Length: 154
Image (cartoon, rainbow, N blue to C red; front, side):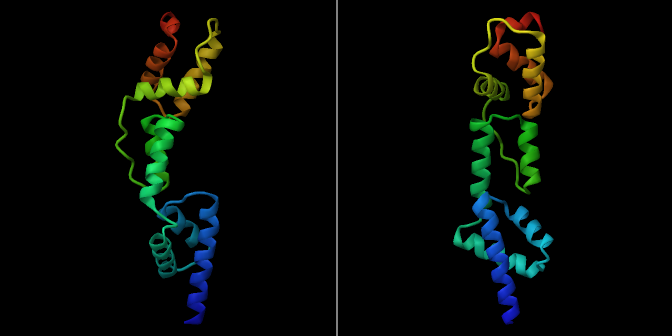
């Protein structure tokens, strides 16, 4: 029994070390502990204790990620769904217009559109939006809204 409580303490200490660096979901934490050789019951007890003490919260992480992907680093629906699935969380119903988020992402990254630009820059802006998880049609429309002079180019 002593060995079991010691292993549980080790699992909790390991988890607290990871959580000190960044927020993790219950799914991610369980996967990491399993990779370190902890049993299913040790993982369950450790995650339950961490949740009860407030160190681990999927709801808090979900709110934080939603804020990040809609306001701080505006991203498209595809990237949001992929990131939440990777972390084992349910993707939120993102409010607002995806095209507006794409324009906001352009403004945050590149500022106001330049008066003179090269086609190479247009391709760079387009790739940026695709990497952020916006669909091609949304990216094109956002580029046109961000820089109305692109209407003839796209």
